[in-house]
Image (cartoon, rainbow, N blue to C red; front, top):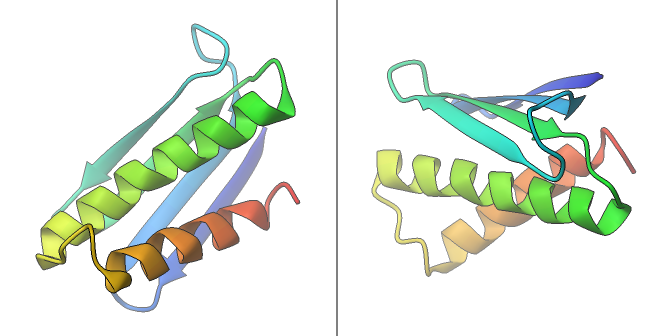
Length: 96
C-alpha cells in the first residue's frame, strides 16, 4: 500500500492511501474533516490501470468539491479547474 500526504499551501491537507484492500475492486472513498481542512482519500485495488485512473479522478473530484464548498468557490469556474488539475498532478506523483 502506498501512502501520500500533501498540502495545498496553508489551505488544505490531503492524505491518500493507494491500493487499499477494500471490500470490492475498482472502488474508493473520500472523507473530509472541514474543521481540520483535511481530506482523506482511499483508493482500492483495481483490475486495470484505466479503472485505477478512473477511481483516482473520481475521488479527486470529491476533494475538489469539498474544498470549493468550504471556500465558496464556484465549481464551474477557472479556480476549480486549476484545483482539480493540481490535485491530479500531486496524486500522480505517487504512481506515475
